[in-house]
Length: 252
Image (cartoon, rainbow, N blue to C red; front, side):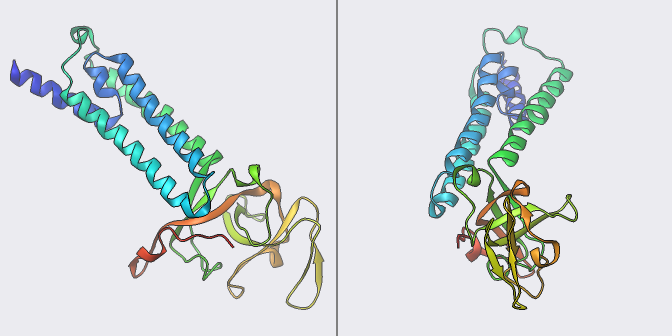
């Protein structure tokens, strides 16, 4: 009997590893299992929403704390599933393998996938810098945190580093600095001037020699701005991990 219980505990832990709460379902506690996955998703969404409201100097800490809390819920659900005795309804619990495959697809792929997609599209996302056009502010290989909510709270400002849809190929995402706001006149390197139309911003790369920016493709519609780049979350180059860049603030 003890050996059988140990095997059940191991199975419950493995199922919990695949999806928070699935181990509890295996132990006959369906409601608890559903609660675990809802808590897991709720902590992630709530934590990210709170983090982007923090000042720039606290944003990195907020994201790290959120991810730590999510990891704690995940680990706790596995441990709880392993150690918890089987519920009174264990004998009536679903025991067919295809039920757990279906539960994993619904919970992980559909539910959690939708949660992460919502967060990426509406709260914050991490983008990899693939060029040298914004050096030295960002380096090729940086992963920057982009706040998708920033311009719902504040207006774009000159000097902000933004991520936007590239006008000439809408499948590509570019990162540049705002050099002029709607209605402003900017003086270009050749001495000419350009007035930025309303509803658009003029963007330039910090590394003028390698940057393709508004000098080539014109101003960027505000509707194509995806968010404000606020910090470097991770950085890795040919020399390896750039530890000193992790957490670097990108504010002007």
